[in-house]
Length: 193
Image (cartoon, rainbow, N blue to C red; front, side, top):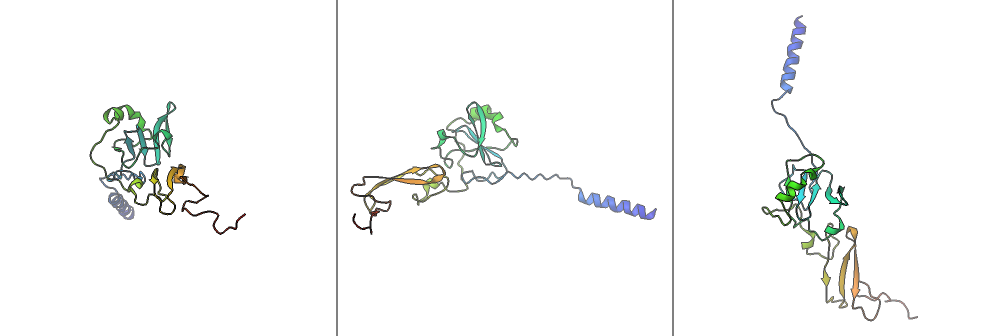
């Protein structure tokens, strides 16, 4: 009987020591993209008012209206190909944790119309369009630039951005030969035919 009472007291002390008056909730929403605003690591959604689109950090998906439906995609549609995610304003949506923030779209659209700008935002990463190495294949950027007066052949290169960031240089003003991007003749070292 005495052993049973001691066992009961020990169990009560054990349960009391493991219980706490506070409840801790850890929400793992994912890693924000480089264009996301700094300081909001616990939110799941951003609303991009300029393009009326949501971004879900947890699934790394954009949520936008297309073809009469709200779709979840890992990319923006072609109509937004020139939209700059780094410079566009991101409205943080802290109050919603479900899977469909677009239920509040009418509210977000009326409160944060196109062109809305709140306070200044600093992003996690640097905009690749501002990168000093514009000729390099920098992830996440549309690299539309012109390089005129190339010292190796005075060619005007125009970059065309392909999906995934692959660049195919287009050479204009190329009189007199088949030259590669460095201005060298592709027939060098070959005998005359």
